[in-house]
Length: 123
Image 1: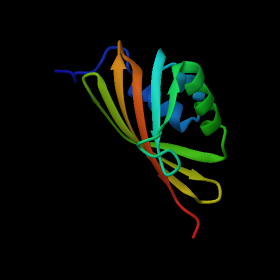
Image 2: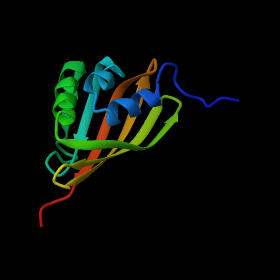
Image 3: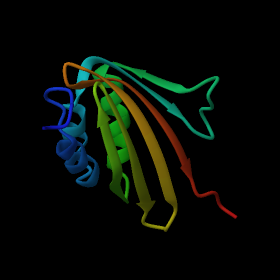
Image 4: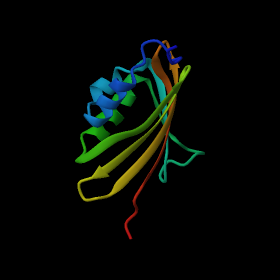
């Protein structure tokens, strides 16, 4: 018996987009009206950074994946209309970033995403 997953969501496309730093490929996984929330040291839970729609998400993805850093999809779990994954990143100067994402799918595409991220602080 196969795994229950939403039709059309491709975890390998997610991996290729993240590890290949391909913002356009990642953007194709989102609905037109998707919402992404980012929580980190600068945008804390009571005031997260919120992006509405593919255009705002595209701007963020273009910025992140244009940086001199590597990205790796560490884990990815799909259950019904939900996806969770961990992404590890490293800047060329050695600074590391770890991000966890929880996503809700609609018709196999990402409709909502919450990203929690932390990075090395300077000593």
